[in-house]
Image (cartoon, rainbow, N blue to C red; front, side, top):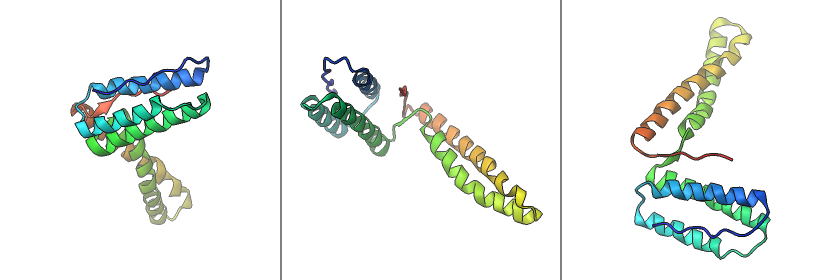
Length: 149
């Protein structure tokens, strides 16, 4: 079982949103099968946050940093990703492959104008690969729905 984060009484809307976002992540994590070692690490980090006595600005920064650490650990240790993770990553990878495609088309046609045509082609290929990987992750219940604020 994962610990809850202690909320502070504050009028700071950014702090309230950070707490809401973190609570939502914790509720999503609880619905997945997570190894006990990873849960222990999460609980340790939550204990550190609960004992953090700094001002609101530093608390927001600490909550956001811990949030990102949790996402990283989920992705690396148990292959759980947020919705759309693979699509956005593969879109960028596709762009990098699109550049040589555009160079080949440009060299083959002897028209420099076709150099940029490879970028959208590569991006589309990357998006398709990413969507396939996201669908596979969803089918295997390795995806959490994170609502970005």
